[in-house]
Image (cartoon, rainbow, N blue to C red; front, side):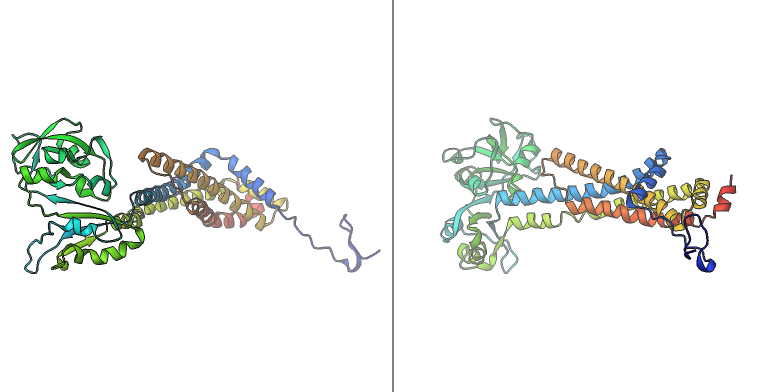
Length: 412
């Protein structure tokens, strides 16, 4: 005898039997066994995966819609430009409202890097649909004087009609901002509105101006017409100027002293694009609540997975006992149930990511935004489901591994 044990189990030298080594499950075997366990309970698997899918879809959609909104704001900034500054009168040392000099626009245009400059001047008149409406009912619409170059300076466009030109700005003609037209219920040119103590003919309606929302709420008349018919004093209340992008900071520093050399502290300069940039930066602030709701839904889905796996262990005790009696180790049983939990969670995560991306594209297309779904949101969502699946499957897998084969086989 050679001291070795053959495959028939005979004992060799020393009477020692060889150590039996259980076969190892390959990755394909683990996946196959896990899928077999899931296919056996399709309804329960569907409901559990649905909970995971809802949580992931909510989180992906919230992040995607927020990113799409931010991209739209940044696109607006790129389109409108960030090189516009506005100057308005501040207050005097005595707390009274200051006034910009009547030559402010001409002085602004003399600054070297400035390429365009225009202004609006607020009047005391109110605009109403008819002269039968009380004068105090302004609907929040300001009547402002302006020049023919304002539309070009603001990079605006007409929804309908035409802008004021050298002829119409001397006569009772008015252009309505987008919001003022809505409030007055006037969307067509040729209609008349009551301004001051006379009728003005609507010659145009503007499209919204994101960098100048105050113009959206205004009725704009020519500079000369405002002085002739509305008692306008000629002092501008807002100056709009554009310069080269590289010179914005320099222009901003010299603009107050140029507009009002005697009292530069009475001139307030702002950059309208800063508001849009801040809005874009804060676009995700409101999403925290919705992300919290998505996290709660994901947690509920994880509890559903854990519940499904625990019940599966209770229902499959005979199966577990049979596998153990045929040589399956505790580790293999534990791996089987952990694989089922991961596959169940991964199924819900993938479906949820697809649904969330679809919802983002649908909503962004409806709003006319560029659809954006960050890749980190998709992969992060699926990764979160795998973590949830691992946590949810640890206890059921450990419980299944502890099942005694003899007890399991004798259980009805």
